[in-house]
Image (cartoon, rainbow, N blue to C red):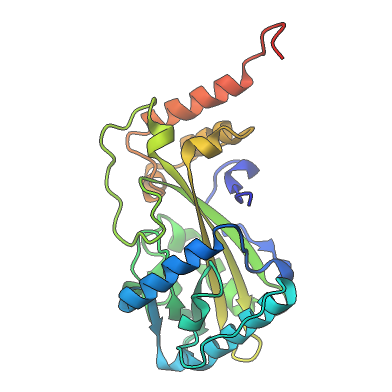
Length: 286
């Protein structure tokens, strides 16, 4: 499955980056399905308080979401799906999809808050710390989000139509391939231009947002894809584009995305890969 590498699209800017979503392309399944759903099931069994939460008011939305996922998998993936009737509806999603699911619902003041989630693969955040909080508080750690995108994000959630789902993607550089990674980042000792490709990992989140027509809740999905940096950077144009985006970011955003500080080793590695790709092939070499 090809990663949605949004840094190939042009200069860095803080933006929502929304794209129209074909409903048939809502959830992705690939060759890692069995391994990832098994990991999700193990987490749900061993650490339910870390990966699952559902406020009482979100029960109807959770049941609607489960029914939509079942319908999508049967219709668009040809899967035969039989959710556990005794499980919480969000826990019922664990064996069905590689995505995490969050429910956002409108409050009395018109803002949206997180009312439920199955979050097996968090990237440096904890579900219990975000549950019940509005968008502004959820995104407070993102440098510049509330100042530049807080208003547009609120308007988007209010105006999202059930028949017009969207998708977006983001990316970060991480020190571990672990999918379940709620703990804060830690500096990686001994990082250099020579070993950055092997020690660092590109973590991409493909996210979708769609309105649930009956309850009006917004379902936010997160599909996490992690690849070792050197296995992505060698693809045409990737290293040069990533290096350009890293140079364009202000320090706060670079730190939030896990870009090593100082950025030297990562940039030196990316530049070397880009230069090697751009070098002319000597005469007589096929």
